Length: 131
Image (cartoon, rainbow, N blue to C red; front, side, top):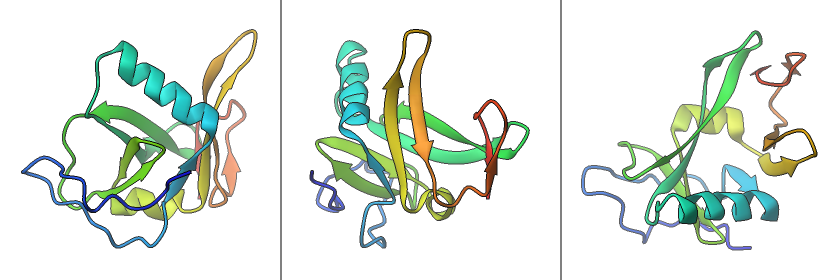
């Protein structure tokens, strides 16, 4: 699995990627990589970045915000895993450090699940966490 920082990838001309991190902030499982690639292919999002950010949300205070974007923001951290370009901001990186993102599909639901060593607690429904 290639999880090296992609400092040699050319982001949009208005964004400057940061390569401060020595290792990826977040690691995707094979199932998560496959799902991201499927979404990109079916929605015609070639060349887009997967952004993973921690935002205020839910009853525990923090949640995960996933998006596919064409351009990075100034100061974003960028790394590539198995051909997926992943981006986050420096504040989110503190909350995401050491996390793992998986794609889980059951008979009744499907979605991304995070294993975050920085989460001290989470709400009952699992949609938010506190750190």
